Image (cartoon, rainbow, N blue to C red; front, side):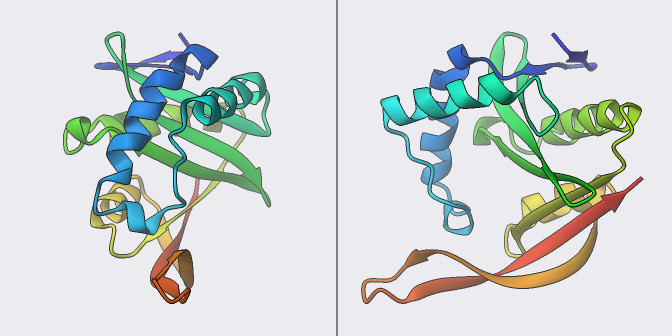
Length: 172
């Protein structure tokens, strides 16, 4: 275990976590917010391979993937990928655990941990219509620094389905 909070255990992702991540992605793909994210392939072989790659690189500093666990259950993950002068954050939590403060609690712990390593700039992108994600970022102290048009999907005629994305930044 890397970090223990009041309710959570946070550790590096392990290749054995593939089933839990697959379940999170399957559930997420059915949500109203899936339209605002890149599609998550839930084919078993693909998920196993991706989580294995995450586990391989996770102990370095370029790409860090953390499992957020409630007792022994993986309820979400948070990724930090190095970008210009800081790290971009990505995250996904199973909807059964939304609205309970777990995402905020785990983000605070990880940001504090990374700050202790000298990392002081974080960015995140999310759809402006994804209010739970936007509210999480604001609650963590992120500021909206830009907007962009984003598309991950196309309609039946092959036209991009575009939405407004927000670019958020936290400087400590």
